[in-house]
Image (cartoon, rainbow, N blue to C red):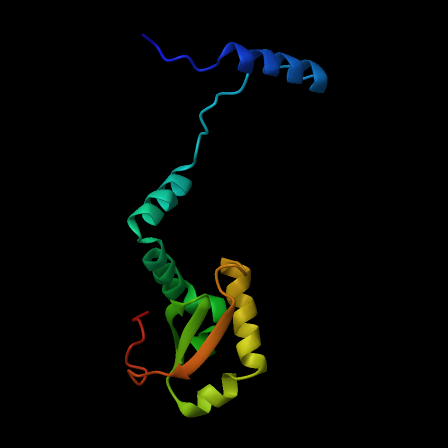
Length: 137
């Protein structure tokens, strides 16, 4: 036996909406939402608890293009802690140089790419790996 997709109430409501909004389609839309593979994959990653790891990996891969090659040579993204991204800097001179306007510009670029809801702020700190933790390009 095939499942019923539309009840009589749903079909009646569709008839009223079709007439009210003068819609040309006589059949109601499917109750099943069609999702893109990317959307479905994102939902699966969230359910498995892997969405943050995927996000961190994409951030690491895009880092040089995102903030610029000169700054990327001396920085690397760390973990996300309560919507604050920790950015590791390889030298104290660069740390001082990036504080203030540089930090704000970096945050704006990251927020433009990943959204203001994902990252609310940055925390710059010296790299415990001394810059050796940089990903190979």
